Length: 424
Ligand SMILES: Cc1ncc(COP(=O)(O)O)c(C=O)c1O
Image (cartoon, rainbow, N blue to C red; front, side):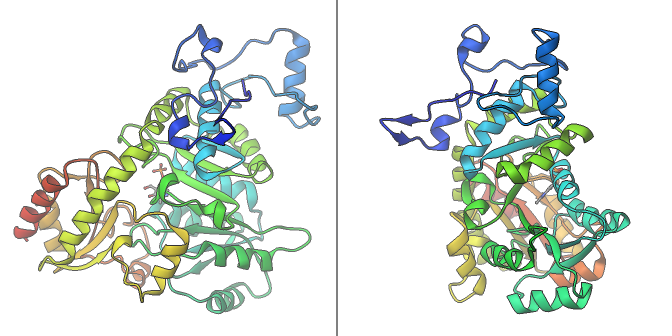
């Protein structure tokens, strides 16, 4: 199915938003259908037994594909046209060689970590992490013999190195997992610094890879591969899907760093379904539009919250002071502030809950990055399972609420936030 697709005019490379409607698909494959059909099939017929044998030889790694030989369609756990077209389209945003899609963001993270880590390895990871990732890293990986070390916001390079040495002695991190901006605090971590650490930790036998969960800024506002990351991961449930109607994930990088993840995905069956793949292709057509509108709205809302007497603290990338060390990372690493705002209500859990229960337009629900605005209470919801001392240390307290700004009219959102704050 994979095929050359012309993404240039007069030698000029077209932008991703110009290519999302057709890249990687030719209508003649499907009786002229302008849009790719949903290939709702578990399996694909072979033209001959010899062809089936050839496909499997390559799929099972029995031999390398010959020059110009593409592995044909076999079985939808291994490949499917909707996923292949979608994955080709996803590569354009991040400038990746190859992308994989998954049945959830957690499936993408788990498959990526398991493909690249072994018993005895050490994972260095930023903190805080999304609650599900935190559980995977702190509760599941140790049962497989993988130790973890935390990198807190604001730590210098030497502080990170000292903590690694103090935690695991002479063992070197085999992988670095970053969530930047971090969920739910919007803390930024320096990807170039992580790449420099990874280069130092790499040996002649093992390359330490840097994987960045880029869910919060999405493929529009941050391109981790351009800052030295090896892998970029998404919960595609969020901005990429963007309509609160599907669960999916993605991982992108070079062919070499993606290959072991693709092999494990085929075995575990953590791939996305054809229907989900088709829905995401539809979503990608408006990704740029949606994220720009959401960000425009978020900037207005952050300015409103910043001066509200019932709001103590607003954590939004668009409000970073120029003398804040995070501002320097922001300027170098991010293309825009995005649409995730975390803020502290003046009070504690009771006041936060009063606020959440008073909203009328904004929905009280976990998840983020959708067309509708969503609000939640991280300490008792998305991060409920995180160790209480860790939450306190990292600023995920009872007064913190997290707002994912949607595409509604900003004035209406501000009206709703204002009346709910008045109720506190
Ligand atoms: C930053 C981040 N990464 C990963 C995930 C997990 O994604 P999913 O819910 O699609 O499995 C989430 C979910 O909220 C998230 O916020």
